[in-house]
Image 1 (cartoon, rainbow, N blue to C red):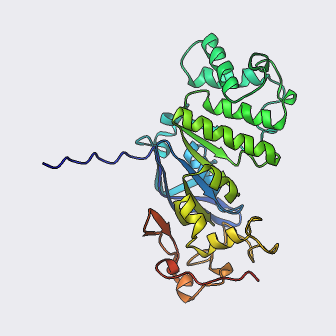
Image 2 (tube, rainbow, N blue to C red):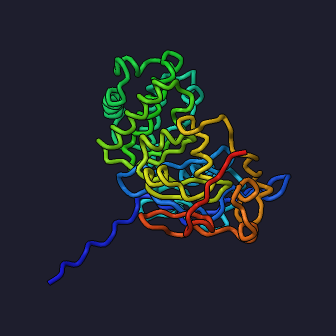
Length: 330
């Protein structure tokens, strides 16, 4: 008698065919177009791409804070079986923690750091202020802030940049979230402090069984932290898959060229020719074709779908089933 396999568990977060548009004086800005990704429970997904590729808008959609006037012509953001876009993010309040990019601008300078985080807990976490204060001291200890009790009464300017980022991580964990969304949280920090923050995030997500969605420009950060990676270009998914497989054998020309620009791999200081197109002037077909050294007529005709490859990978490129030719940066 054969045992019936257990049904696959739904991912904690799934973004399904999401498109986001905004009307501007310069025309319709197509910021995201048919983006699909998933964050399984207890894993870390990295999102990478140049500035202007839609990473911040993706995070806003997940957090339920799209700007006024943003339109979602299609798609869904499913968090723990509920569509955030439909319920106004009510189901996600307190259950998704956010670590912003800039530790110097993300805390109000005129209020004590502890009071700012306690206000978050008052709104979204059960318990009394005494309970919240005791829990926050433990969180400060967990994120390795010196003198956790004294830190409650300090103002933001009394902390270093790395300590402020630890404060923001504590704030993201204050309401016991299931998912933490981090928007390039190491960008404003020196290299040594970056490594400390990454190690702290690895430790905390593992200890608490959290899922993590991590946005970055840095493939080195992806390699150190993320189980899976999604490469965004001009609002569309170019490539996705297990991080190590994508880094070792990229299948999209854009991914390969991005990796070729990394200081650990680059022989010359040469970037990718051209720039990311404006959201109001996206090219037809594959959005990367104006910059791609391998572009051919089919690339101009229609956006290539993300086709599945072996090993849980996907790539939106007509070369996906062939050997990707060598490319030379001019």
